[in-house]
Image (cartoon, rainbow, N blue to C red; front, side):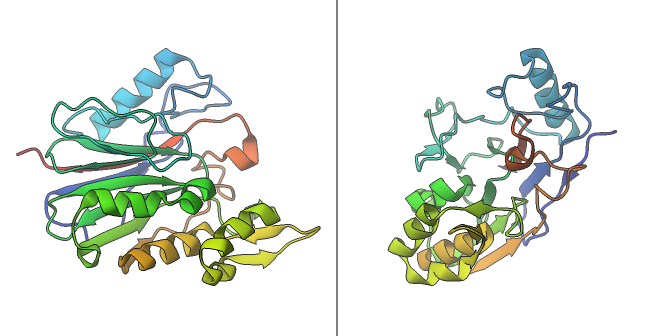
Length: 247
C-alpha cells in the first residue's frame, strides 16, 4: 500500500503544517509492518531509517524531524536553531521556521499546538501517565504565549471503548480534579473505561486553551490504519508532526 497520512482538520495559521502518519507505505516487516517510525521497538534500523526518509520526502519536510526519547514524562524540548535535543522529553516546541516537532505514538494521544499568529508551535505525547503528570500544562507554559491564543489538535488514540484501566489511574486524575470523573465509566472487577480525549480537553481548558479540535479515530479499533500497543503488544510507532515554513 502507498504511504498515507492524516492532515489535521483545524484552523492552522498560515505557514504552519501538520500531519499524522499511518502504518502503511513503509519498509518494515511484521510485526512492524510497514511504516514504523520508532527506532526503539526492535525493528531493523535500516528499515526505520528508510521509513523516516519516506515520510520526509512525501511530506516535503523542510528538515529531518527532531525525534525524542519519550518516557511518559513532562520534559519539554525547545528545538531552536541548531539546538541539540534534550533527552528524554515528551514534548517539543519551536519558534524556528523549518524545524519539525515530532511525537511518536501507538495508542497514546498526540496533541499538536500552535499560536494563532503562527509564532510558535508544539507537540506533546499525552498518554495517561503524561496527562496525569502535567505534560500538557508544561507544554503550554513552554509555548509562552497567552493560552487563549493557542489552537490544539488531538490526534488518533486508543478510544474509550478499548482503554480499560485500574482504580490507580482514575484516582490519579480525580486527585487533581474531581471533574475528571466524567472521563471514566465502570468496567468489570473494579476496572474503568477511560477517555483520554476528555482528560486532555479538561487539562487544556484549565490552562485557558479552549479552541480544541479532535480527530476522534481509535487506534485500537482500526487495525488497517493504525498501530496499537494495547491491541498487538510488539508493534511499530506512528508520528504526529508539526512545522513552520522555512523563511
